[in-house]
Image 1 (tube, rainbow, N blue to C red):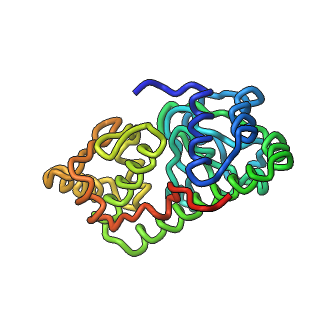
Image 2: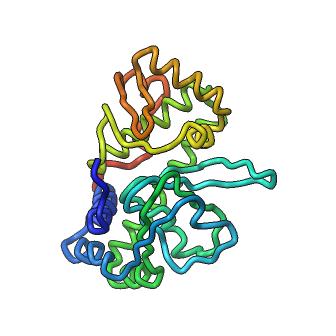
Length: 248
């Protein structure tokens, strides 16, 4: 799949907002104009660290980003994966002191959007404030669901749920489908996302492949039977809030 441009990534972010919030022409134009006041940066590995104090939020333009926590012995646990169009730390606008770090899982481009610009947008367009708020709620929903996956589901269900979630999120933004989507993550990093050892994860992926349900390729995932995958993972996309109701 072709790499996203800055303007395309901003448009993907706007699409993410309007999936959940009603925005008028003025609000939409203001979001699209964010590219003009932001800085693009190529990042690898950790690019936001615990203890940092941020003056910007990070929009994923291209690549993939993990949000993670780390304990003293260096072990990490991923708590979210971010794809192009995700503003990975929108919450930092109101809490700039970093407690969740961000890690580029592959060569990744980030658009750094100044906090003051986002605050000014909210002051000028209250509807955007509600849209931003709703977006952070969705991120919190994902974190809660991941906690259930790791704490209460077996390894097969946890992996199946994650693969189904990523398929649904990619499809919602036009970046993939329920049959295939880009997934440039190593098995070691994927193991950190589901709290498994790489060896145990490899067994789960092998079973999904042999049962003709899903195949993890080097930089993508092919799903052969989405319904079975969703069933195994007990996946219900409601927590992703991908459909707007009568909210404003």
